[in-house]
Image (cartoon, rainbow, N blue to C red; front, side, top):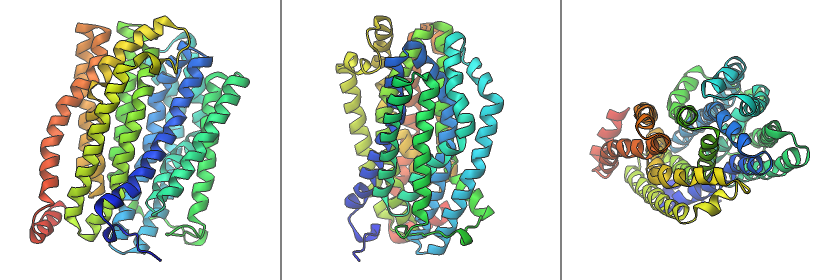
Length: 456
């Protein structure tokens, strides 16, 4: 059999072998959100878009929990493979699967106890609140499906099967589109139908993903009688993957705070416009997350195998891709805003007028969003969970004062300006420390050994 391990192939070929399926998987998975938004906008309208946007901060937490397990276990899994320790890699995988079920219970309790209160804290009321509640109520009992379906494709990918991982997510996305049309367009079930379509598609991904690890196609094949839970590994992967959870908590928190401020200085139309701009920006977020996620398996492998110069080369390739694509995406949306918004609204001049300024301002710092996410994943890949977590926390903390101050001075425009300004400030700080560290991986073998010893 041909050796496809990262050390046996070029840096660029190895990176793209993981990055291309990862990007495809992320973009396809994004259809869960974007197709929901298109169907909701076309069939339910502005209040439906506002309702689903008010529900998304809670859904972000659930997705983040799944990514915590997937990224944490995946990084340890790849490091163990780089160390040629297959038994350890299998133990990490088994622990990650069991841990995802335990965390699912916590998500169910969270939604059941605090779901309605968190919606109302954002200013939800009337029909918009009812729409949001319809969406959240489905996830109260389906939180486990959402958590496991977020973790599994990452675990499959780190089992050296990126194409199977992509196929799983692609199948889920196609099912989601078909069920969205059926539940929203035909049965007229509103946001409850959108949530049911998503969870049903995710359920299929769960069944097939778990089945993969018990099949002959898995590199780290599992057996029911050998499943075990290692508490120390659970603690380690939770700490390592915590930045992914915090990153999605950041997304959820910022969306919630934006919603609340839009309701204070604007109205429901501005929340609907924010939902549309968020859906459009999500396309780039998912692309950049795919590139960053594609960096993780080879970099973790190189780190475990002591191939440090390859880490620097891989990071530089991923960074260039994220920055160039971010600038291109920003240019396209600024040139064709009406056409992009038209995907979500049909003959609503008020919503169109509110969305265009949002696109012009909100996405100015889009490329820096990708850079910040890349930095977080890089630190996870080299087993520096603390630094990855600090980036996620700093990202959240940088936006809070701006979001509380700017709208009071500039109104609705101040809400739109918060993200690009905070990205600029945080991006400069991260760039100084991160690029300095990456360059250190070009040192002599002795210096590299000392670097890794100090990091441990």
